[in-house]
Image 1 (cartoon, rainbow, N blue to C red):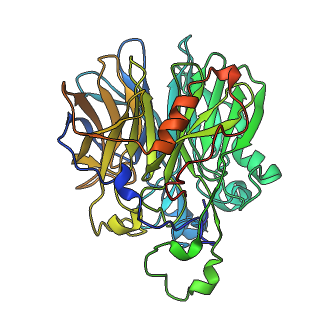
Image 2: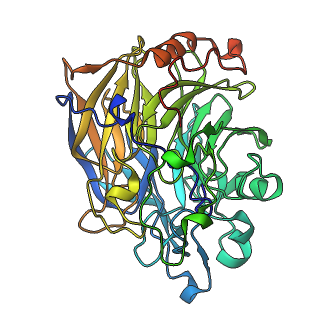
Length: 442
């Protein structure tokens, strides 16, 4: 995701009502499991029901400003490094224990907002543990300027000794190959495990990676498709001092910025996207990915800044909207909250109908969405904020019977959802049909 072409897409707001801004009766209730978390991100459960959660941290002073780089997606505000990342264990009663501490972190200075460090933690079926580190910057500056070579990598974790073994260096791969052919930015954001393979989405490189957990490294990578848009239709915030519209280099292809990945009931992968600056409302998509060849098909559309996805036991998909309006309308770069940062959880039934089960009511700027052993949903709340009055939380969303008023899926998306019910091996590279009405694509 880049700032230089502010263009990473500034979509119009006309389709936001499809799902993003739906105000329906709440079909779920939110409760706080743990608070005062430091930029909390993705997590997993061990066999005893404890949650292992990655805290991206709040960066640091960058060794007095030496280990800092300009943010490529936040108006060039300095991103400075520090050892404030961690992995915490949260017991069923909410008790927190730090499992890994003093891990590298990168965040906007001085707010500590938008931390990039430990981004995900997962167990495989054998109980082996893995931690994923983000980066959110130019990978060519990671080792020398930032002095944080651990960022942008996937590690196997020995929970007894705390030692980390690198399985994939995504930052190094991006620097050498730039697989999506756009700006050279790296930010591994989320992962899922299927057998002896990890699948990682990178919101900086805009790709899906397949990685062997046996030490074989990166096996395959494919870009998440961009989307054709009309730059003149986009809305964006006041420009930073000294930056003109002519300097934005508006583009017609919007980068996807994938942020979450999960395994679907049919064995395929489901990937959701945030969409790039200026984070247009109603323009985020849901994709189905073949785990064998990583071919991608868009299956749903019309959301806003998605950062989580999970399936229930019946095969219904739940997606998480980070903020219901364009990010910049709720929070200024640097962490100053200027408007609503309410998010939503939307259920997409197998027949394509949508139901907003929770909007606001304590759900704010959340990331990561998972069903727990108890059958309830969990997410990291206020994920971009350092500890403080509105610091990070782990929250539980208890689903209620009944539900909210359902929102009809646009006909074009229903068609895609229906045709997307292909087995992983039967999925094809080409889209099965173009959006019939185009629903104002991103």
